[in-house]
Length: 335
Image 1 (cartoon, rainbow, N blue to C red):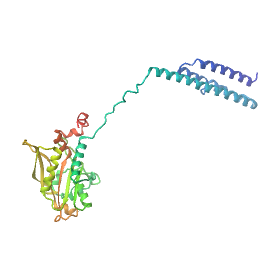
Image 2 (cartoon, rainbow, N blue to C red):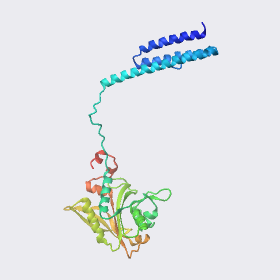
Image 3 (cartoon, rainbow, N blue to C red):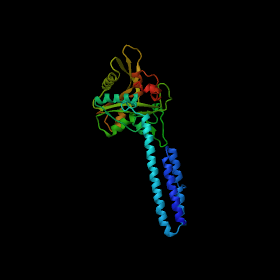
Image 4 (cartoon, one colour):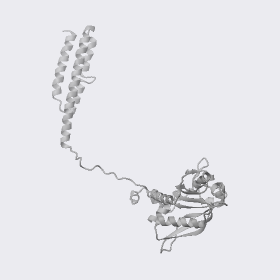
């Protein structure tokens, strides 16, 4: 018997074994064992292909056709059997696993704005209705805009009150949003009506009423003929709009380098005796107006600044400023 005849006989035996074994495959594990035995790199078909190298050139062509035909039949039979087993597994699964498509999907609770954001947007809305614009500026400032342009030179004792965070390049994190007012006035001729909300930074120790990171909203109105009476009217209007009826307000003398005269704003629920501090205010210092190119003989202005945390604490009776940054859902979801 020639080597080619011997190969034909081996191909016939493999074909018989292959068809016999396929009939008995009933699970994925047995199917994988079949693939390893017949179709893997070390399987029976791969061993038969090694015989081609021992044949004469004239026999190799017939042997190659014979083995390739066997390999194609084996692969096709394997795929067909795998399809049958997959279909049977899917049918068994769908018979036991049923989905009720009429049931509602999972409910994902929607988030909402933080209380400080709500307060900021409400205050902005009040002043937008009064004809003011909302202005913003950089949180990293120069000493000029944070101090000098606001009539606070390096030797001024009031500068010690803003113990600032300085950066390596000489700039600093702004201690208030007043630099925004200066930047707007430098680019805008009177009249100027703006509110400036934003984040501020000071070296305050963290406690119930202080934080090194806090939020302010400041107002600036510069125009001909403005007086302290206009300032008082605007603040009274704002307090009534934000806190509602039933509050008294007063102004008491104070000192700020960038306003002259300067006042402190207090409020209290009507019928109570304790006054609560809202923030500082006053007429814009003529030195500040001159520094931005305005003529203080022709225009005057007033400004005030309130802390957003302070406003929220007074309105909602929150006693600790640290609550705003605690990321406690029990607090956040109340508002």
